[in-house]
Length: 178
Image (cartoon, rainbow, N blue to C red; front, side):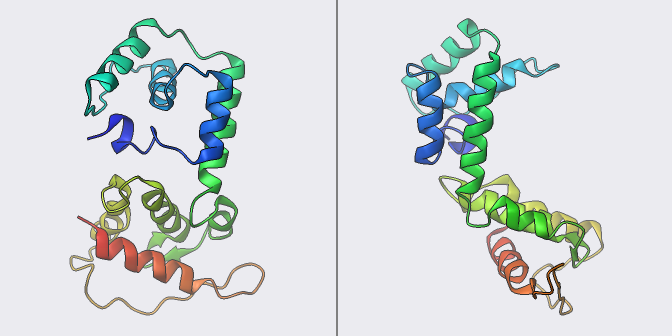
């Protein structure tokens, strides 16, 4: 296991890492995630996987010595997050176009977001987001998500057929759910 979300929050795209390194050159990328969590009300513990002595030392130092995030650090995090999300295979502005649509009783934008988030992971085949779609199907009584589902179609506000993207994301999530 790697620190913070299986390493997903410790290894960002180059631009996002540059933003955080410019704001605090001596801090690790993982420390930003830990400090963000430390700043949230009600958080009393952060569980992060660590696979090296250096990661352990960094996490302990971060939680023990780092103060609250400054406004400038919060802005750096916001910019880094935007860059990270924009590096996804499905961009946030595309996902936004699917809000309000459903696909086999699941949010179409939720399916696309889960798919995009999985593919942002260092190991895209091991992420909690894999199970978003299968859980929605189960909640709605579809026991066999690998079974035949009725054909769906989404026509976006601009009149284009948006079905293929959701169908591809659905297929990937079903094939890689655990």
